[in-house]
Image (cartoon, rainbow, N blue to C red; front, side):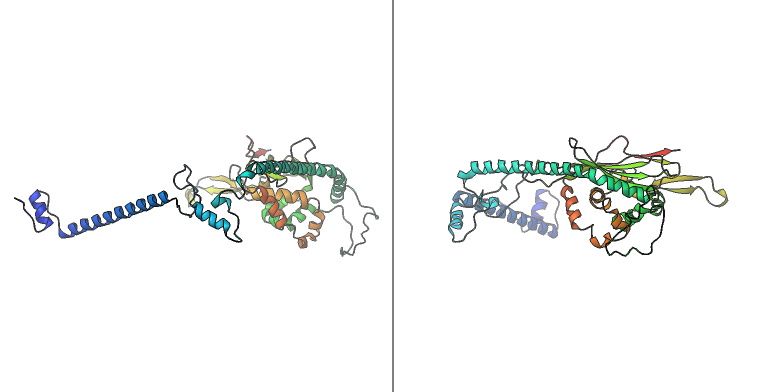
Length: 391
């Protein structure tokens, strides 16, 4: 005999299960309907995909290929649709991204030969940039006597003659006077440049007043491409050495990932130098005193040092320890600027004539951006800290 119950609650009671409320039963029925709808939808999608696959038609929508492959790989159009597009009057040739290569398969060997020629052109272009570097080295020998004489005049080693002081171009020089050299020449020129003016702090000015000369040294003909900026100081109370250096390493070879283009010499890394600060004279750190306790119960104070913002962090490598770091792009930008503009034309910055020339324009920004974030290599040595007390 078959027993039929008037409600699911009575059936549950007869089976021994705990009775469920009408709200619970309604919720379960709703969830079951949702599950059935999802299964029907997935079944319809599978049947539609199988039907299209058998007929040879696939979707033209582009999907990004998965790293491990899979069904979302790049697919070609249906042959009939591709033929119609190619035969349409004025139609563009099929692009490689959607319809395969833009050239016929019979030309593949020719294209490979042309690619080899293009790669050879990039190698020749790289050699051109290396030869240009050697040419700069050659003419640097002609520039150097002029820079040496400029340094002698600035530092009162050589007194200009009347003939050397004659200047016929209509530039207003102001009232004439006589002085031994030009005090604070390089500090004044640096402060005209916006990026350097932001870097130079009050304590830095006291040190830079002792700066005598700035020189650019270019690597030899058979050496790797690089240039070194030398900052020559007088004997002073701040550090023990006389010359601070910053070296920039360059390359002109085409990148392995893009062998058909050579962007010319670009900076790939930089190295600074040690600064042997005398005791208590390091301007790159801040010193603060901490007093323990309050009021009458105060104990002896302790001294704490922390990295500070200073022009002399320029001589530390990018991303150096102890928080002394400079942005890599800014570092490379300063290297180009010192070499190509500031050192050769320092007088124009000292007289404030270079402000209207906009030397910090997009020309230099574009050049430094050549190796922008492609290959950034920071040379790290055991002496990366570049900080040492010298009594």
